[in-house]
Length: 154
Image (cartoon, rainbow, N blue to C red; front, side, top):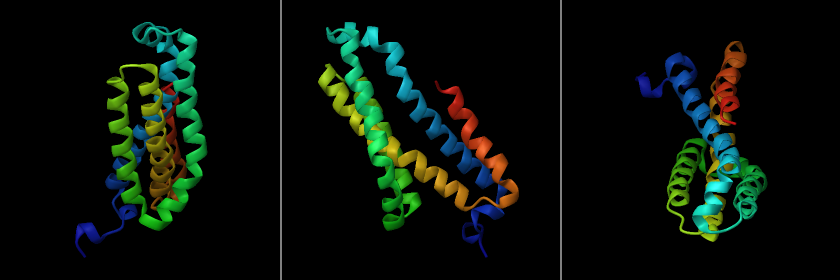
């Protein structure tokens, strides 16, 4: 059996690397959920709007996450965890770049919704993929590995 045919749980380094990748995506999702709050005055100044108005972009992201997370399970069953996870990372990354290039609050809000789509798929699917290949003996360590980086984000 070649290395690519051996399940991930039989390669502890591969399993750890996948868990770290998912932990990184969890970190980014949490960071993006909170970062606009501290940057709202600067964003408001840059766009010529009140900093309170930036709340619409914050809410759009969090609401998109909350609404679309249940969809991630269905998509994963239909198309596979790897395909959905990689697509989600691509969507999230492209949306993050578009947010940085936004010229006004409307653009920022639309791109934050797109970013929320990526985040809603990225984290639950990634965690599911990691936990599927984690043995019961490694479950606590793996959950800690997934969780601790995300706790540092806010």
